[in-house]
Image (tube, rainbow, N blue to C red; front, side, top):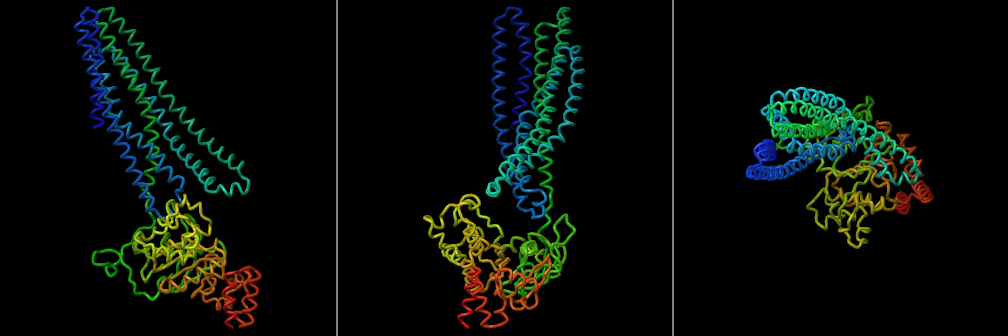
Length: 602
C-alpha cells in the first residue's frame, strides 16, 4: 500500500509543472482570469490529493518498518538462545547486543525509506527526464551529460564508504564492551581507584569510534554538494540555451518555466537519492552483521536417537534403566580455537541418590567438567552418558529439565523472589517454595522481609547480599525438583555453619536426588559417596575421603592447607579430638560441627 500511494503522489507531482505552463501561457500571458482560476484550482486539488497519498504512505511505511524491526529482533533473540556457549564466546555479548539493537534499528530505518522513497525517487528521476524531453528534446541533451557524471560520483562514494561503515559498527562493539565492563565492574573499579584509567580507556575507545564515524561522514557528506553543483550547472546551461530558444520563438515562457521545474524535481530527487545511498550503505553493513549471526550454526544441536529409544510419537526419550545416572567414558575436551585439552581421560560413574564431590585448585577443569553433563559444550573425545544414553542424542530441553544447575556466579532476574524461584517450575506451589527455601537456608531471610516471597528484586538481585543470592539460586534449582542437582562452587559466599546446615539438609531431605558438588572446600565434600580430585584437567584421585587421604597426595595437600587434620581418619578417637580442636582454632565452623559430633560420639 505504501509504495502504491507514493507512486500516485509522484505522478501527481509530475503533472503540476505542465499545469503551471498552461497557467502562464494561456492565463497570465493572455490575461485570462478564468484559465488562471481553473488551472490554479486543479493545481491545488492535485497537491491536496498528493498530500493525502503521502500521508497514507507514511502511515503504512511506519507499520511495515516497525513490524519488520520487531520480527527481526524476535528472530535474532531466538537465534541467540539456540547458540551454544562456543558461539556466544566467539561473537561476544556486546556485539550480540549491538546487532539486536543498533543494527536492526538501521535496517528498520532502511525499510521505511525503501517504502517511502525507493519507488518515488526513481519515478521522479525517470519521469522528470521524460517530461522534460517531451517539452524540448534538444535541451534534454544537457541532462544526458549531467546524469552519467552524477552516477559516477555516487559509485565512487559508495565504494569508499561501505567498508568504513562496517568498521564503524566494529568500533561501536568495542566501545560497548568497555562500557559494559565498566558498569558491571563498577565496585572493582572504585575499589582499585581506577576511575581515571577507566575514563582514559573509555575516552580512547570513544575517540577511535568518533574519528572513524567522522571519516566516513566526510565521505558521505560529499554527495549533497556534488549533486547540487552538477545539477545547478545543468540548470545554468538550460537557462542559457532555453533563453536562446525563447528568444527565437521555438519555446514559450511557460515551457521554459515548466522545464526548469522538472529539472528542480530531478535535482530534489537526486539529493534524496544521495541520502538514500548513505542510508542503504549503512544498512548494507548492518545487514552483513545480522546475516552473519543468522547464518551462524550452533555447534550443539539435538541429535537423533535410534528407533529403540524413541517413543510412539517419535519424540526423544531416556532409557531410565542404567545402573549409573551419569557416566564419563574416556572424555576429552578442548575449547574452540585451542589445541590443548582442558580435560583429559575423564572416567567415572555416579549412581542415583549418591553425592559426588569434585575438588581441585583453580583452573583444574571442575566447572568445565560439569558443563559437559548438561551439554553446554560437547566433548571433543569420549562420551558422556545420562541414564545410559549418550547426551548428544537426547533433546537438550529434556536433558536439562532433569538437571538443576546452581552456577558459580548466582544470576537472579528483576522481579519478585517468587518469580525467580519458579523459573524452573512455573507450577510450583507456595509449599514447594517454602520447602526448597528451607533446605537452601533461605527461608529465614525471606520471611524477615516485609513482603516475603513477593519482595521485588532489582536487576541481578543487587539488593541482596552474595550469600542470600547463592541461597536463592540453590532454592530455585530445588523448586525445579530435578533428578540431578549440580552445585558449582555455589556456597562460596556462605559461612561455614550455614554451609554445614545446607549439606545436612540436602543429605537428609533429598535422598533420591543425585547431587554433584563442585568446591574448593574439603569440608563441603568429605562425606560424599565419591570424591574426584582434579589436577590440570585430569583426575588425580578418586574415592572416599579416607581412601584419598591414603592414596592421593593432591587431596592430602588440600586437606592440610585448609587447617584440617587427617589424623582422625587414621588414628581414631584421639585423632578426632585433635581435628576438632584444630578446626575450632582455625574457625572452620561447618567442619568443626561434624568433627565435634564425631568426637562426642566417641
